[in-house]
Length: 273
Ligand SMILES: [Zn+2]
Image (cartoon, rainbow, N blue to C red):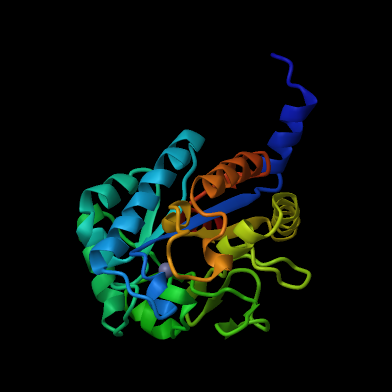
């Protein structure tokens, strides 16, 4: 039998015995953020920025040989159906409703059906744009099995979910998969924290959270990896965008590969049942 060194044994123990899982997710969407800050951006530019970002992260995801979950608006998927259909071969495609800038209740079901037509597979998951609150019953009725629209922390001016569960749970027959926050102080392990906190600190709290919860649920957007410096949006959002951020993401993925297995949310939930 070939000798296995201590490092490999340690890695196998982490991945096998404890089953640490990394749920890396991206909201694949039109870049409508300038509208939120009173600016203007045409629909075609919103799409183009989203598409450019997707082209930047795709090789990183492929080279890393990982599986992710991509929450996609039907609007974006209809504009780039071939790109979304090819992504579904490796990753899970889930719904980010129909349009990023507006919502009607029927968009839940309609977006799922549009995406299923494009990818010829079933769509299981939903994430609302801007983590808008959504009733579990209506999500289930629209044909979804899980909802990942909760950031269980306090984001001033956005939402206060500080009392909500930190880890996944079932509500009215629908599984809710919040994005990860640290156990202490509920520091959100999401895109804004990733780009603005020092890397070593972010990695440390991510590792601590992974160890405590057995999984990490992380979320980003492809457009973050496009140079956003010319847009009239807050500095906290546009600083460190583009290639600098892409290199940071590559490092983070490589570091996390030592800590656990990357999985789609649907596979993760199926394995837990
Ligand atoms: Zn979004």
